[in-house]
Length: 183
Image (cartoon, rainbow, N blue to C red; front, side, top):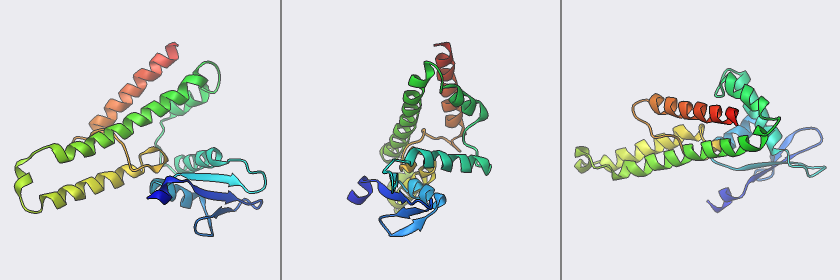
């Protein structure tokens, strides 16, 4: 666990190949995306200049996923992001996005915490704890791809298939975007 606390260092060579310093082998963008989904922090450094290229490569991973039809970001959100690079919104948008994803992480943590606290008639049945642990593992794995930087966390509390909660979050984000546009 202590090893996971420090970022996985990836070095980019002049040939543009990416080198995993932990395993001493070359990696692809998809490998880096997998590390992130597994919960690892990643730092990508240019070997020659020492420049931090992490942001550039993360944006490239997102763009590749979006172009393959794995759309997570609606067109109106992408449009608003492009608009945010000019004017006063530039200083507000990063904090807004960070706060939104923090809400998702907290919601997911809250959901997992409450799973253990809710008494049910089944809780006295043999094997219930194993079933509950399996449900928690499923939710955590499901949310790894959702969470920023692949953290094992947070998503909104879910009921049923989770669409109601997702719709509620989308509505909240739209309301916040409206407020931002008015500023």
